[in-house]
Length: 147
Length: 105
Image (cartoon, rainbow over all chains, first blue to last red; front, side):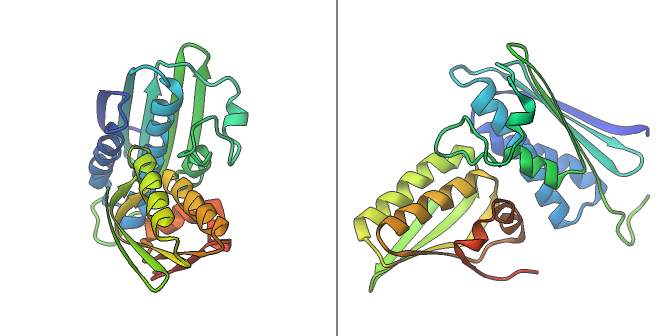
């Protein structure tokens, strides 16, 4: 797979940047001519990953979050959300549905949604060093689109 | 996130407008629960027609509203969900306990 385009943005872990992050990802993904449902899935997965960083990586401080995107020549979109925060002690536990250490406005469904809405999800985390979430989704070729 | 409420004959209708994410959720939960406590309705209807996006924070909002209405012996209904919002809610299994009405493509 060859990379045909990429983006990288960095922003502070303010909750007002959740909408910015998913909008940037959606604008980038739009180059692949996604369906509305595909675009909704991508926005939702990005929102979950960025919210996790804001809530869990930097609970008491404002830290840096990076959002990287790549488009591959087989119509696959890759999104990487990285933080340099607290890290996740037990990734397998954190990925269980309904598990949360967040507040009353969290549901514990973030990783489950990322896993279901994207084709591939990889979570790499190190305590005290941060977390990197890599997600990929291959988009359908639509009639009339340029391959 | 903007909300508009109408109350009459035991029915509280809350129209939501905007995007429901973690940034909006805390204030939204407080506003909805405060409206429910003020009106003590038999039925609370959340109209999601103008909700352009919702992530898993919306699940927490609905669970909180559902629990508050259940404590009051009332019912919560959710109207006009978009496909995107519906997909998120289906992940949680909430459609089995909360009445959801509206178009599904």
